[in-house]
Length: 133
Image (cartoon, rainbow, N blue to C red; front, side, top):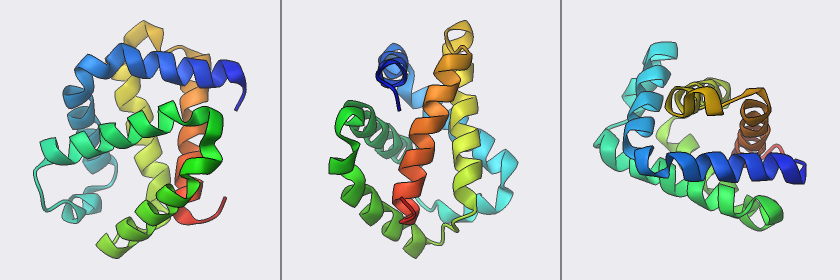
């Protein structure tokens, strides 16, 4: 990622920090629409799960300048998710649902460069979680 892309991700995340709960619910709604089989992976409260998602995104956005430092934690998270039944091919759908939810929350501020920056960041996260980076 370029320095500008990292800035776009950080700035847009800060812009939606106050909307984190609703954004996570938008994300899960879209995820279950795109992949109804994913619903069986979630046995706990989606509000709690949404907080975990936002906390992870916060860690990622704060670590973009030193991504290699969080790569082992993401690999551990990926192994944990694999144990829950997440399949590697589902990561693409997860990224698509999350980018969509961010776009819904940010509206016109989620322009093409910001969308592209998030896609690059999320691709790096999912590659680390799958152990393919």
